[in-house]
Amino acid sequence: PISVEPYVSAEFFQQEKQKIFRQAWIEVCRDDMIPNPGDYQVCPMEVWDSEIIVVRGKDNQVRAFHNICPHRGMKVVRLDHDESPNFQCGHAQVLICPFHGWGYNLDGTLRPVMGEEYFDKIDRDQVGLIPVTLDIWNGFVFVHYQQEPAQPLREFLGELADDMEEYPFDSFTHIARYSAQAKCNWKASMDAFHEAYHAATLHGGSIPEAARLPEGSVPTSARIYGPHHSLSMWASPDFRPTPAAIAAWKYGQSFSAGGEMKLPGANPSNDENWWFDINVFFPNFFCDTGPGWYFTYNFRPISESETVWVMDIYQKKAESCSQRIAQEHTKVMLRDIVYEDLSTLEQTQEMLSSGLLKTLNISSSLEVAVRHLHATACEWVASEEKT
Image (cartoon, rainbow, N blue to C red; front, side, top):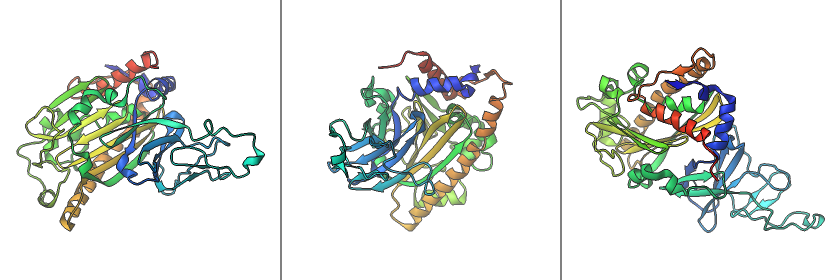
């Protein structure tokens, strides 16, 4: 059994903020979301009590800064919450604070200030946007709270990144984003997405028959890489897709089981009857890779009982109307599946918070990823802070 306390304790969550989310590398976006100099993306970082701007400079370098003006503390870029509560992309040659007009170059340095003669001398070496440590792996942008992390990014990602290194992420294009804010702990939210034991019951009406057979509840293989883990999912060799899925596979790639495309960096154990891999980089980033598509999840903690979930879906760029239709098949199928996953979150958290259960009975094989995430979070909270 595993303890319920880490899912419900406000004190434990405060420890997670300090000892996990300010000690680990956190994925925030892809660099191809800001392809041109001046492109930026604002990324909420609630678990840091902050918000960051990821921007591509005129020198083509991607940098990150806390979204705070050192003049009076105003946000330099304001999120338009009517557009999206989770991200905002934009373009600017100069980042200008909307309060008093202080401007910053794309490298974070301060530009001439209106009325500067009325200030004491401003030391431009000290006054500018506050930089955030940033590195990129395979197009994925990661940030770190510390100026000098204990581990460089590639070392932190370790052998899981080794296994995925050759996957052709750059050949895919972004086709959809789904998001939700749920009253559920971040770990309990993640637990709903990295085991297949629930598929036969919860997804009986939406997921392909391949995953509703008993064998679909058990990963074909599982790998632990320090704090990270990876599972390979099973697809029935006798699976008969729906007519819509047949059309999707005929004219393009779909999430539906049965695709024959083989890509490097996927199915590292060379399992037979392989469908896709669930790859989880601790603490909160999924990158699930399949034959002709991949998707990511980010789980952003708000409190011990609230999480923002964001899903991004990628496929090969559509070059015809039929391939575009295949993309729509993927988007709709995944939408229906994750709606069912999300439907469990708040009711689970509500009852975990009731105090009726002190422990949970977790399978060591069917729910190995649940057990591993729980153990890793507890281990990091119990450890000394990394400096």
